Image 1 (cartoon, rainbow over the protein chains, first blue to last red):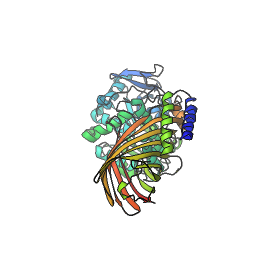
Image 2 (tube, one colour; image 1 turned 45 degrees about the horizontal axis):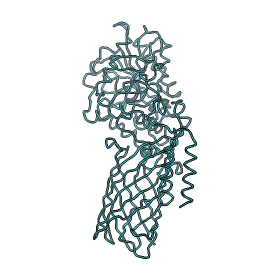
Image 3 (cartoon, rainbow over the protein chains, first blue to last red; image 1 turned 120 degrees about the vertical axis):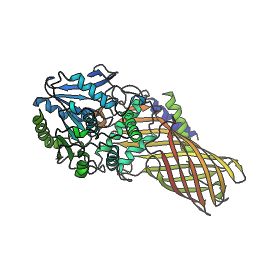
Image 4 (tube, rainbow over the protein chains, first blue to last red; image 1 turned 30 degrees about the vertical axis):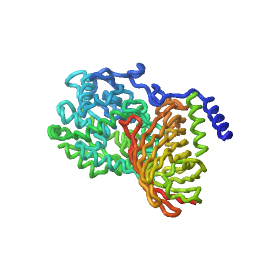
Length: 329
Length: 220
């Protein structure tokens, strides 16, 4: 027993000799500070909140608003889209409410249609005149949000590129997410997503802790047994765990249907899917895109779900994307 | 830092002395002092484990034990959990029995973004009806992650350059509530442990909010 005690003292002394103990919720310790905590970050005050936002190009050119996925991811993984600024477009990036480096919000602040209202406010913030055309480029959840907005305001949008939206009705999203998260029971990916729960837990309002775990779960996206077929890990700033969880809960409780008015949007939509995402595929792309009356389907070769983020997918997609926007410019 | 020191002394002390095997006190005969076991199931991952326990000569029935488990995956050595502790039958009346368990925990987890090493503790109470050939009981417990050392890998630091490595104190805790039951033979026992896990705030849950373990013990 004496030996055990001595060993314990020695181990304790070794640990205590290290740096001072840290706290999980210390701002900036595990996830970056958001715009309301770090004034050096570019931001815009709209819709009663503060969005982390950046723009590229001439503000008088046609606008392309880039919409990231998640909900809760950030626009860092879509920064390739800056390339449209060199082609005569004003490219707007913003981290959606509660996502990335934008200000955090509590669970009660989220509603199904709040992201749509935020997008409307962001467009109003940047649009110089009623004649300035506005295009949307949405990826995954961002493509769903783009569709929700077009369904509500078809007259405001001059065209849209949609990259693998899960669906425009809740059932289609559930089907896709079920396939995308079909990890092997004996695989490392499932373990990586679940084993951490005994090391770190956060209260319902411990944003930094929940966001940190959300960031760590992102490691599963490029795992070898993930069906979504990405080339590697996506770059990110901060995953918004609260907005992600709440939006899924709200969708599950209330459902949504963003196709009821799409027949009024007769402009051609460029609907992009990837060759390597086994959970998506041409069949799902055709099913989801059929809600639009005028669709150009484009298969991005040599890419997975995040086809706009990695070099091979981007190089394959960009000429077609640019051609699409130029035709509607 | 004092908290880490105290926690470490307490936990290592318990660990070195001791596990939380699922056992049937009534199935031990006078000559059976030791028990070994294997188990598999879901416990924050699909896990496989092995355990060893030894009865101590004491006024109350006491079992000290150690337990090692690891989750499935491509890398079998990067994640594991070692528990050590003791369980004491504190009350017995006819076939009814109550047992308290205390365990120290040392566990490790690594994914492409970070490595976690944690000292924790687990306390639980088990109460039920025990017969020599079977038992059924209810369980309530708490698993506290007291001190966790986090070391971020280059992949995470590329995304979050300001992320800080070091000891984080405390880092979480989960309650578990469930049932356990088993069938006991002369030397062998088969048991099933299952229940629900909730985070210490009682409002959130782990990604998979339940546990289920199926195991076999051998007494000798």
